[in-house]
Length: 336
Image (cartoon, rainbow, N blue to C red; front, side):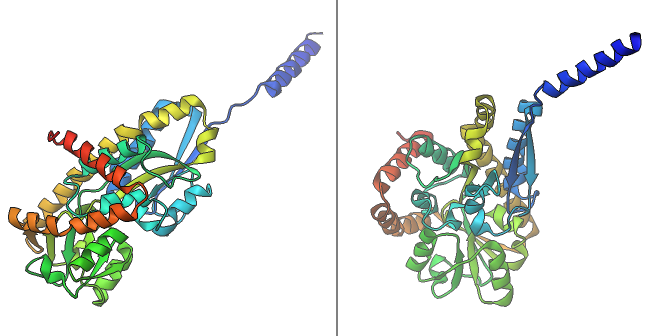
C-alpha cells in the first residue's frame, strides 16, 4: 500500500512541476565592432552591461559580443540593431550617412571643449526631443569622445599647412571644414586610414587620442595638432521590439544605468583616457604636439563660423538644435 502511495505522490509532484511555468531570463545581446579593450567598451559599455546584470540578477542574461562578432563593418552597426541581429549595439552616427541629421552639431569645429560637455549636451538634446533618426530603435545612452585633434604623417607648421594634403574625416561636417582649409578630405574608417597612411595615400586624420590608440594608429604619425576639430558622438541603441518586450522593471534598470548617468560616465572616461594617452605620447617624445595659441584658436574659430552657419541652414530644425546646445553649454560653463 505504501508503495502505491509513494508512486502516486511522485506522479502528483511530477504533474505539479510540469504545470509550473518556468520563467526564462531575457537574453540581451550587446555588440560592438571594436575590441573589448577599447575605451568605449572597457570604460563605458561594459560597465553599463555589468551594472544592469548585477541589479537585474537572473531575470536577464546580458550577453556581450565584442570585436565585431555580430558584424564587423562599422558602417552597418545601425542596420544590425534595427534588424535585431544585435539587441544592443554601439553606433557611430558619422558612419550612418543621413540617418541622424542633428548629430552634425558634434562635428562642428571649435564648438565643444570637453568630452563631458559633448556627452551631457547630447543626452539633454535627446531628452528634449531635438534629435531624430531613431527609427526602430530605443536610445539607451549617448556619449562622446574627447574633442578631436589632427594627427599627421606629413608635418605642418600651422592649420594653413593642411592645404592640398589628404586628411581623413569621420563625417561630412569635418570634411567641409577641411575643405575650407584647402585640404582634401578622405572618408575612411580608422582601419582604412591605417592602411592609407602606411601606403602613403593619406597624409593625416581627424581623430581623438583614444581612437588613435584603440586602432593602433599612433605609431604611424609624427605630429598631433591640438585644434578642437569636433567631438565624435556615440550612441548605445536597443532594438525597439526588444525594448518593448522587456518588463517595466527591467526597462527601468536599463535606463537607470543609461541616460544621463551613462553620458556622465562616458564623458569622464574619454576625457581621462585621452589625457592619459596624450601624456604618454608627450613623455615618449617621438610625436610632436602642436598647441595653438589663444590668438590662433580665436582666428580659426572665427574662420569656422561659416561651417556652423551652413550646418544650421541645411539641417531641419538646425537653428533650434544649435541654440539649445549653446544655451546648455553656457549654463554648464557658468556663462549664462
